[in-house]
Image 1 (tube, rainbow, N blue to C red):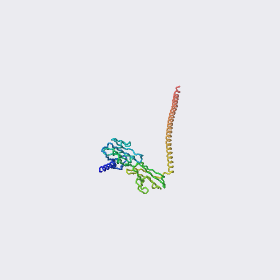
Image 2: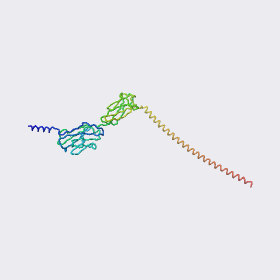
Image 3: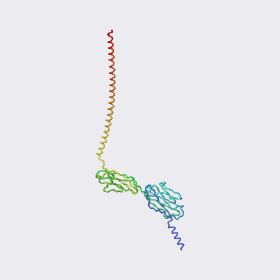
Image 4: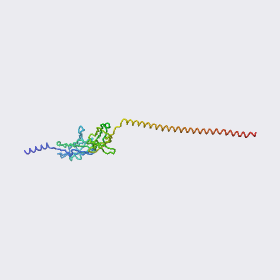
Length: 311
């Protein structure tokens, strides 16, 4: 009777006991972008050897249709997923009941749930899995500030601010800056907090015109952008600016024409002066030649008069 009871107890223990147990000391892991995540996984098996040991790490996220394999170990061989090559460090010695892995250069796309699954035949029952939730924190990217609406007194004007990247999701703070970059109240507050990044002026006045700064921040850091809230230029001012530009062009053309005309006139005068000088020189030479002819005639007459008495 006693032997039968002992056999029943032994069978009960063998049938219902957990033959393998997989655990992790961490349920959540938080790391910044570019950092390294240590995913710890330990197991206890009833077998003395690990020759039939298999270790598999899987990853799943809300953006994925199905889980993907990160790492697989069997018979002393490692298989690392393509997107984790050169980033994943496998367990140093699985025979020590340690199935932990290390992933470097973590990115926002690496955030999600990681599952460590261990089997060691003939241990196939028990708690064979452990999960870890990984969060990857990222500083907000440089936000983009914009102004929407007619910036005129009495109109609805909206300022928007948005960062494309950041984890956790950034919170936005608007402040107003004066000429010395000193912060001034916004809508009666020292700082205006918003989750959407929007700042609305339902009935804007000229006293609210000026420079505004948006600060996008989360647990990792912050980034800022600024925008100018100033009244729009009226059509008359635009027309005046266009006319002024045209008049400026006309003035430039007149100045260029005047300079060209002056240079041309100066060249014409120089040519005329040169021609006059040459003409005067020619005239003087002609007069000198004509004066020489009468003098020669007079000498001949005087010589003839001297010879007449001898005759």
